[in-house]
Structures are given as C-alpha cells and as structure tokens.
Image (tube, rainbow, N blue to C red; front, top):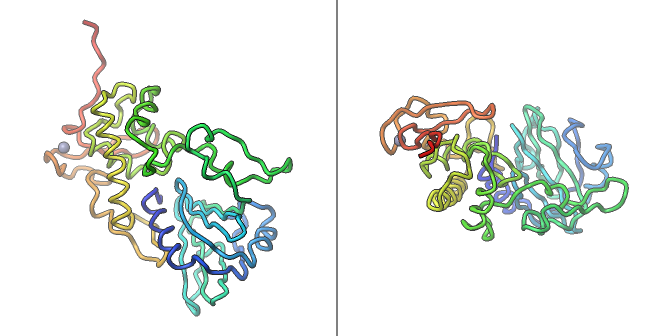
Length: 304
Ligand SMILES: [Zn+2]
C-alpha cells in the first residue's frame, strides 16, 4: 500500500507533467471509485474543462488543485496508481477512471483491487487542517452535504515532514497516549502518512520495540523516534518509494526503496546493526518486523 513517500513521489511527478494541463473530459469505468460528487455522471460533468494548477499531497492522498479553487483528491489505498499516458498508448484494462487531457495525453487512474477513491471538492480550509486548533473545525459548504476539502481531512493528524512537526510537539502527543508505538504510528489521526513499512523502519532505527507503550518513552527516546520517522520518510522519497506489489510512479515505474529497508519483510535475515535474526510478529492484525536484540521488549515495571 502506498504510504507518504510513495504518494509524494507520484504527486511530484504529476506536478512536473500535468500542472497547467486541462482535463477535456473523463470516463468513469468503475462507478464506486468516485466518492464525491454523486452520481459519477455529475463528477464527469463537473471535472470537464478544469485546468490543473498544482499537484501535491496531504496524508496518503494526491491533491489536484484546480485553477478555479476546487480540489480533486485521489486516495490510492491498496493498489491505486496515477499514470500519465502519452497519446496513442495502448488501453489499460485496470484503468478505472480515464482523464483525457486537452493536449492528447491521458491521465489514468489504475487500480487492480478497486479500493481507491476519487473526490472533487470545493476549495478552502485545507491549510488549517492538522495545524492544531483548526484540526477539528467543521467546514460544510451548505446544508446538503457539499463537503469542503478541509473537512475531508479533518480526522487526520499532522504531516510528519512539516516544519511544525517538532520533537516537542511529538513528545506532547506521545505523552498522553498509552497505546503501543506500532499501533500509534499507524493511526492516521496521530500522524498522517505513516503505514506499515515506514512504522517498522522508524522503530528499528530508533531502537524501540513495537509493543512499547508511548507514555513510557523518555525524552531521548522521543527525540530518536522523531528523527527516525522523518529520516525514513525522506529516504523513501529520495528512493522514489518502495514497490512490493503494485506501487508504481506516474510513469508506471517501480521505486527503489524496497531494496534499502532494514527490517520490513526481512524476517529471519540478519539485522544490519547487530546480526541478530529479524523477527515478525502481528500487532493489531498488521505484520510487524523488528530486531529483538536492538529493540528490547518492554518489561513490566516492578515495584521497589
Ligand atoms: Zn539488531
């Protein structure tokens, strides 16, 4: 499943290749891919003629900011991909929504398992989301469930690579929680964009056991984890994301980061730091990979 580095890679590619392009028309081949507006015919009518001003990312969602202020969101979920196809490229049987660009190219939303969702929303409110006080603010355009883009992300936590995501702020959030670190890192309301791969990698790098309770970390642990989360995400972006099954960039190419991971899917292989066998456990129904020597298991505290 694409996480922050994979979605960021796609968004940066699309910014380079489709910013300024006009969507002449769209074809929806799998109706459930369209989340908003409904029905999908209305989405098709409303997106036609729109010009893409800028492409970026929030959490694990690609955002197409349109010239008129509206925003199209593409949540790739399990197997979604956004691919720019030059004119004349053979059709793709897994393309669920096809956007015809005015210059003859196509922007194809490809999704084998069909869990991804596309929405088209009135603009406004996005900047405040996740920035603290605005995170819970409700912005509804009118009383008929015409959601604004800000509301789409109202349940998401802060962006881990933003300047405002400081070690101090991270410490404040961790201290109030007794949840296990792995569970908490996967919680999109706690921090946006981190998924199974980068949670495991960050915990290994910070030498913290995945089952450690968040409120047992000392200030040095917190600083190490804060740095580790940001490092593994930045390196993931630099390596154009990790491809294990379906993830591809906007050219349809795989990333390189799967070759450079320390623990994720390295069960029984030696730890790069100490040589001990990497173990796999299940935490909250998610595969979790760690080094039992570098990442010591939490022990119940004993009363003196
Ligand atoms: Zn180790």
